[in-house]
Length: 373
Image 1 (tube, rainbow, N blue to C red):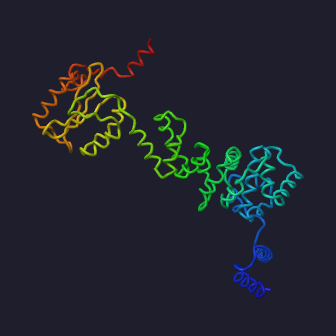
Image 2: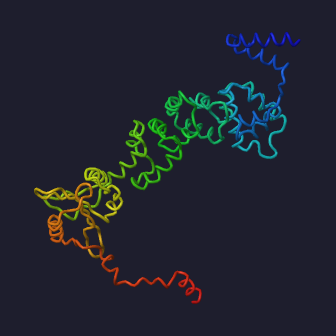
Image 3: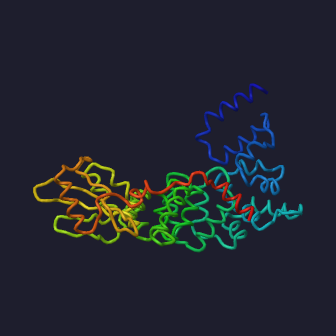
């Protein structure tokens, strides 16, 4: 007996690649009778079924290994059906009776894929079966099956770009969730593939909505991302393109720095840290200028708002943060004073020596006074 079984295993191993799937399955199942194979394996069922494990057990019971051994694409059809039944409350107390469970199990085993999906969801959108067939070996969360179904049911033109997006790798939960979050157009699918994860999109869309006033990425911005521009780089460019308030200084030798892009370029040209002041420029707290006096080096300077006391010169430097020669600094001060710009410092700084800092009156004392009132 052992000699015969050993010879049979050797023959099967050698011939496995040339056998038809049906013959190989028959040989394996027959061989399993002689091996230490058990009809139940909680570890395998749990690993393959994931969050649908309880639902699978409620339907398949002790036959759950049938699902584990089912071809992966057909298995995903089972998961899609069970996910919908679970969402509809089919397995809530008291659950399925034996007759209903046997009928469902029979339909799962015997019915066509399209009929199973249509029976559970009401219809089977084009591309749905092919897409869940790209889910791989294990189940997804129930909401992923439902989300993909509703997406294709309402927007059937998304099936083809989704299939194109997962030709060389499984269709991920993040991609499905991203396509649901983005505008439901083929361009949105292409853009979705450029995000590493849903969290990257969620992090980007919050400042995007504030900066642009749009609820979703515009078609132009979707196209730029789909064509290869990194989402983070796109957001930075949108932010830096925002215009600063109108300049209060004008002159033949003066160039106003009008936005963040120009400020970054100027910082690069002068080798200084101006690029870190974009927020102050947008809020109107600072204005930035390049002054090019005749036959002198260019000067980059900023003036800061000091409401209600006007503006004052906050910084002036040559390239590479070089200090201005004395005469050039005097000429700059004289020019700014002519426009009413102070060249001393902020009023707050000047008032420092004259304000008493009431350090002894702490917040706890204030709270004590409120309680005593």
